[in-house]
Image 1 (tube, rainbow over the protein chains, first blue to last red):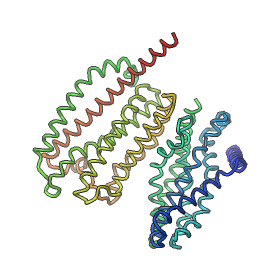
Image 2: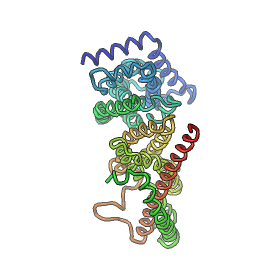
Image 3: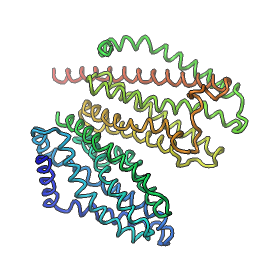
Length: 221
Length: 240
């Protein structure tokens, strides 16, 4: 556990010192959402209708944006190899990396989401559910993303490839995330959707680090 | 059992004998199946003549799932036992699977326009099938993305196994959700709910598609093995 915390702290330091990564992610998130009123026109009811979907899709894309660097920099400068020699399983390292990824991208996204919901004229009833759904969903995004990020290590055209691998796997989460917010707005129960998303999180929490570390082992061979 | 087929030379001998048989069965089954399906089988009382699209649509959708399951098994064997032929089998199945998935989506779309009034609806089965198509494309892209082919096949094997969660979702999507797409009517506990005159061409097409798939995969595997030998010979010439 202390080793886990060490890696998290190291990666957080790196993320904060190396600069603007997480600020860039939030900027991308905001810009991507802000494009929509220009694209579909500024009518308030249309924007309110598509708000939850647009915010979720932008969150998916934003969280994917920084995934490429999850293992890439450590892989290139060799520290991933050293980390893999440390006296702990690779799964714990992956989990630590995922935690950092969530702290530096997922958390800022959740913080920015209410602002965007206001910009998109979303119904006030959906705000709480949106934040809750993002809070359950974004860790799952980071977990699923870690598998893709590990698979593309050392490949050509990593970034584009990553989106092709990961976005299809994001679709179920998107469906239930949007549907939770929409049912909150129309006054239906949101518990089932949130429970299913919680189920996704609980399922990906052990399985994704396992698959990602299998991919990492091959990259380090 | 795997050890027996692990030998590429034995595989080459075995496949040389089997290939013409597979080709023959494929041609006969698809020819007879198409004739029965397109000319002999009755038109549906509700769907009219457009029910005949089913004879291509349903077998290709089955094959799309069958190919992926096949790839997942091959990828698992390749990862666990480091079986060189299993990696090749997974790699060779992917384009065929992608084509079957595309064919299922395309014929479904052609059928959907007169029946549902739309080329495409976002129901659970169609959407999960589309995801399957993207998984195939992702597999092919990842397999080709590395300079070292063994690394590519390892990485894409992990991807196939991760993506396998989609297969039961597709299979049971019509039972779990109240979809526009029809629920299963052939493989049911109470026996098929399809008339024999329609079931026979359907089954012939399914057998034909399966042997076609095996034929193509074996052909591609042979091509890969021979390609590998040619590369080795060229390298030897360069170094020697």
